[in-house]
Length: 265
Image 1 (cartoon, rainbow, N blue to C red):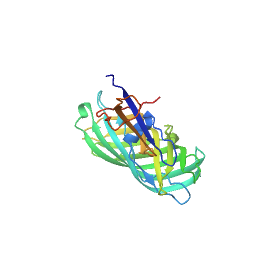
Image 2: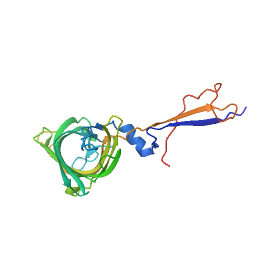
Image 3: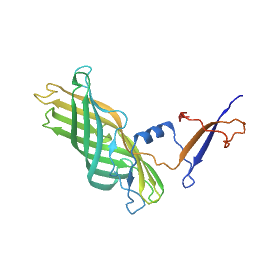
Image 4: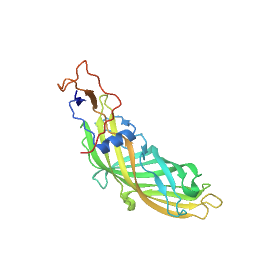
């Protein structure tokens, strides 16, 4: 008997909003961690939210100035924001956010530096610009820009100097985007990223692993805060349609062990 495999998809919606994922959104959703921010009393949320920015894909790299084949690769977490001030203006015509924070680099080496493993905290000064948004709207989507980001460590056992500079204001373009989606309880889901162009300058400390080495590496990394809000879910079942009526009958069993992929059209 010829057996036909049929697909049956059931879509659930929240607040009558259609919910779509493309491949890039799905990747961010898997890699990210949910972030919520309270309403600030005016129908929106303050940025930056208190959640960390991380680089879920890729690493922050030191390459130039090291021996051929050697690298120092870091996972970065930027959080603990404080001294936050807001003003009107900026390059995007909305607001300017100035604040301080802590960048934690979990650093590991490759090549001859394969045994190098350090966690290095770095105090950062930061300025971001954000485009206008309409307070009170349930979804607020607007461009942002990492305008200035800089911090350094000195007197470290391995680094006489370790400095990170990033941001459009330093000639290192770092555009971004933020989407705030109001949740049923009144808080806001935060989905925010910056594609940061950074420069790392380092000078090895005498007597340390990097003694006699120095250099500057420029590259780009995405720093992500939060993830897209889940307004619904997609359920897919695959089963043997034994009577060819294109619906799942009580006598027909779903098939297990089947993997489905979501592809960008």
